[in-house]
Image (cartoon, rainbow, N blue to C red; front, side, top):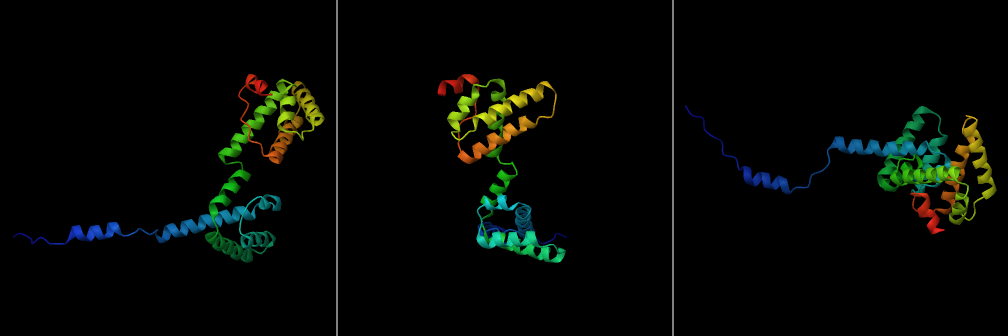
Length: 196
């Protein structure tokens, strides 16, 4: 005996569902909220100086500063939930990008670090690079950098810890931050000597 086949209007029903906008599932919404709360936790972990460099709504900044002062576990948990709620209303993209820069994750920050390392390497190889740096950074303390170079070379010869080597990078980084220059990375010695 043959079974009767059911007749369902499949074409018209499927077309109606295809045109309807798809909403995120409850699980996806929960994951998104937890991610925003994670950004809030990262903000709470920053120093006050680092927080000042991040653009965010004043109410969010106040909530983050309050969370940094809270020591009781339950009160801190509630404050973190409140920060997560505030994060939903804020534009999280620029905050995430600023956190990436602070944590050294962004591509621009990595490129900047490499550029500064190249300057340091070139400076150790040739003292004349100081003139190029002075042209880029007019507020450069040339005596300080010259002394750091000598100390770094001495440390290298004597196999001592690279304190002056690290200090050179720190000085270059502070100069670069203060001037916000966007000069290209030095590819080789000939390219930069032609420019100056």
